[in-house]
Structure formats: structure tokens, C-alpha cells
Image 1: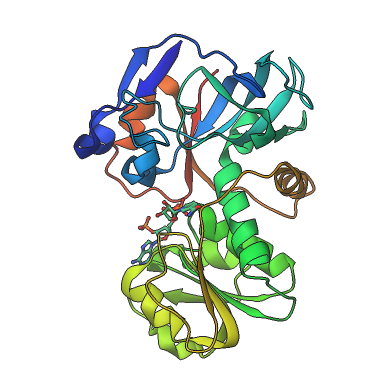
Image 2: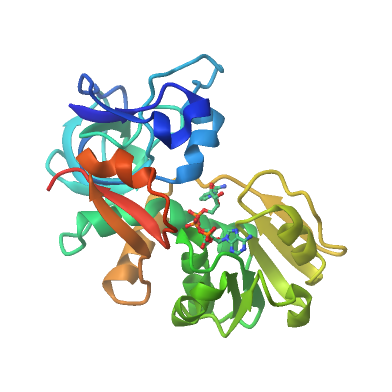
Length: 305
Ligand SMILES: NC(=O)c1ccc[n+]([C@@H]2O[C@H](COP(=O)([O-])OP(=O)(O)OC[C@H]3O[C@@H](n4cnc5c(N)ncnc54)[C@H](OP(=O)(O)O)[C@@H]3O)[C@@H](O)[C@H]2O)c1
């Protein structure tokens, strides 16, 4: 099969290569999926799991990419709940070969059925951004209707999902980003926009929940805006700041079939919009990941035309 591999962490996306690899085999409770579309988060080349297995042993050349939509072609021993020929989408294991390839072997429990009227490119754009937003807002942030949310990077992949899901649950959303993102963020449902390069973040007053996708100084200043009993949720590593009278939570997204199904249902009935910035073929993916212009939204790779 065709696959994109990485061997050298220092080389970043410039070190990606399109090569031929053997097709993966399904282990216990696995499925093999013929991938139709794949999602890639550029920062994953900085994650240790891209380079090593769970015992910290080198696993290069490794195939990056963890989001996919495709069709099941084989079941491993003992696999139940999904069947050959079924359309699926989901989140592939961090420590195994990923989805920038024509096939992936992965645990069946990390997939959900993809309804026939949802395009594979849309399915591949949802797992990481949708699940991260869902889990950060509702599981870790315990968001309630009527609360206020500061959604950083609200024109980005995760931030646009945070903005929409928070708004739909009855929260007041303040989105942030760069000047050019203002209209996009308001269109996703934010009531206010803060240009992080020009506006004073402190002018927004207090909020109940900060959803941080940026870290550093912006995270620290945001923690100071959290009301008593509120929460800082961050997804960019261990929390560096803590609200004076509240919780700080960092987490890594996990797959969840019920949540994936809820997210895709909302996309089908128009309550949630995906945020695809560009779609490229697998043959052009390395060039796309190395493009220098600013990309807004997710880059999706169409693996099968
Ligand atoms: N822990 C987890 O489970 C988890 C899950 C998903 C993602 N993540 C991490 O979360 C981060 C965001 O992921 P994503 O896929 O949403 O990325 P993304 O699509 O690039 O979105 C980030 C957004 O924030 C904006 N932004 C970043 N720094 C900014 C600054 N200083 N001022 C103004 N705007 C700024 C970006 O604008 P520009 O493009 O112009 O910089 C972009 O619009 C990444 O680091 C990713 O690795 C973690």
C-alpha cells in the first residue's frame, strides 16, 4: 500500500516520504480499514508517540495521522460490533501506525459507524477536533447552560468545535484568534471576538471556562479571568497556570463511540459545521503539509479519489 512515513523528528514535515509499505494485519479486537480520507494534526510530529512505542522503543519509520474515515475490509480475532463493508470513522491509536496510508489496523472500539450521507472527508475531519471539544467542555469542564466560555483559537480545528458546541449548550462564547478570523469566529457562534494581537484580553471581564489551545502567556493571562469555581481546560500540555479559585485540567483526547455518533448526527442535522481548510490527494499530501501559507481549518487528505 501507499503510505507516508517519518523517520527523523528534527526534519519535521519536510522529512515526510510517500513510500510503499505492506498492508497491516488485524490483531485481536482490531479491524483493518481501507482509508478513504485521513486527518493530520501538524503538531503530532512533536508527540513522543509518533516516534516510540509504549515502552519508549523507536518505532520509526512510522506512519503519522490519527483521524480517518473509510470502509472495514477485515476483522481481527474476537472483534464484534462492526462488520466488513461497513463505513466507519474514528481516532486511531497514538502509538501505532496511523492513517496517512491506504489501510490501517486499529482497535474496533475506536471507531463509530459513518452514516451513508456523510462524505468521507467530513468524517475524517471530525474525530480529534470534535471529541477534544466535547470532552473538554462537558466531561472535564462540566459546562452548564448560562455559563460563559473563552474559546481560544476559535477559527481553528478544535476552537471552532468548542465555539459551536458551547453555544449550542446555552453558553455565552467569547472567541479569540487573529484579526482575519473575526467573521469566521462570529459565524461559528461566538458573541464576541478578541483579536489576541491587538485587543486586551483582560477587557472581557470574568468567564466560567477557558478552553486553551495556545498555552504560554495567553494561558496564564486567561487563568486570571476565571470566576470563582470556574475551570481552565488546556489541551497543549500540562497546565502552567491555575485559576485563583477554580480548577485547571489538561487532558489528551480519547476515542468514544457514543460521542463520535452524537457529533456526526449534529453535523447531519446542521447543528454543527466542520471546519475543513483544504483537501489534498495522498500523492500531494507531503507538499500540502509543507506549504508556507497560513491555513485556516483542518487539512484533510483524500486517500481514495
Ligand atoms: N490534548 C489533546 O487531546 C489535543 C487534541 C487536539 C489538538 N491538540 C493541540 O491543540 C492545539 C490546537 O490544535 P488545532 O488542531 O485546533 O490547531 P489549529 O487548527 O491550528 O487552531 C489553532 C488556532 O489558534 C490560532 N492561534 C494560535 N496561536 C495564536 C496566537 N498567539 N494568537 C492568535 N491566534 C493564535 C491559530 O492561528 P494561526 O494558524 O494563525 O497560528 C489557529 O487559528 C495544537 O497544539 C494541537 O496539538 C491537543
